[in-house]
Structures are given as C-alpha cells and as structure tokens.
Amino acid sequence: MSTTADTAVVLVHGLFMKRWTWSSYRRRLEGSGFKTYTFAYKTTRQSIDLSALQLAAFVNSRPETTVHLVVHSMGGILTMRALPKINKPGKLLMLGSPIKGSRVAHKLKRMGWHNGILKHATEPLTSGVVAPTVFRTTMMIAGTSPYGMGRVIEKKLGPSDGTVAIDETQADWLDYHEEIDANHFGLLNNKSAIEKTIAFFKQD
View 1 (cartoon, helix red, strand yellow):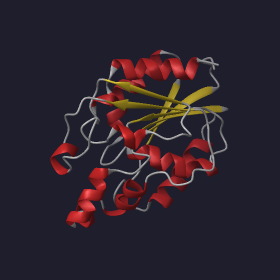
View 2: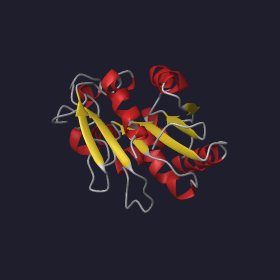
View 3: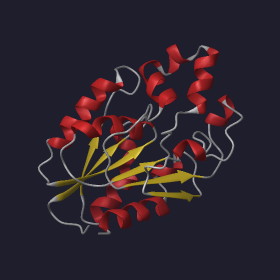
View 4: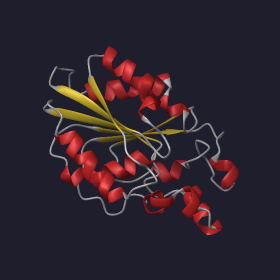
C-alpha cells in the first residue's frame, strides 16, 4: 500500500504512557509522507470498553480514507476491542502487545497490588485478546532485550522484552511476527522497528 495524501496513521500508547512517547515514530512516519495522529486515553482510570468506543470514534473521524494503526503494549488489546466499531480500512502494527495476557499483570493481581496500580487496566492485561472477530493485516514486533521493570515483578517471564514475554505476543491470527533487539519501552524509539513499520505500511 503506497503512501498517499489519503492515508494516515493513528498511534495508540500503552499503560501509563502519553502522546509524547510517540515522538520518534511520529517524526519518522511524517518524514515518510504519512499524516499522523496520536490517540490518548486514561489507561487505568476508565474502563477499556469506554476507551475502545473513544478510539473507534477517533479513527472513524479522521478525514483520510485509509487509516493504519501503530499500537504499543496494552494499546494493542484496546485496539483489538475497538476494531469491530472501526470502519476505516488499513493495517495494524503492534509493538510488544501482550495479546495472550500479561504474566506481570497476573502477578500483581495475585499479590493484591492491582487495585492500586493497574485499576481498570487489570482486566485487559490479564485477559489479553479473547476470541477476536475483526481483523486487518497485522504485524507484531516483539522485543528480545530482557531488561525491564517487569522482571522485577515476575522473574519467570522466559524470553521477553523485560516486561512482556515473547509467547505473550504470539497468536495464529497474526499475519507477521518479528523479533528485534529492544526492550519493552525501547521499541518506541528503535530504528529497526520504525523502518519495519514503514515498510509494512508501504507494501501492497
């Protein structure tokens, strides 16, 4: 799919993040000709169902005909829940999204810390993506650098980006799954991840 004036990209952040986390991605995407928008939501202070409705409305209100999505971490779970209400065609690029559910979130719940830390994010992060019914061509980019805060909470992550385990990012409904040397938050600024994203959106 080639870059045109009628194609845009919406960026959806993950847990505790804000719009500014996409500065590197946005700069590179716009430099490659894509109009970009950032969607912000209250990751812990409102239900994911409400956030999904807001995301769908945001995407559908973009003036461009085609709208691709780049999503990080919990933003991937949110986006999959919003897709049934999104009527704009495009592709989906996920970065380290725990679509199988997060071991770290499960550990926080077992410890009883979820009410104070995760709040409304507890359910989506422990459930992941359940029985998805709407798809678009989707790529997952997972990090393999195991240095992150998640390992402090859950030491039995196995191969991971330090917060999300590789197997938590895998599913048979993904069209592409790639791994790069980056930790969970490093995915947001990783040159290889950004280049793979741009190439993915440009391919027919």
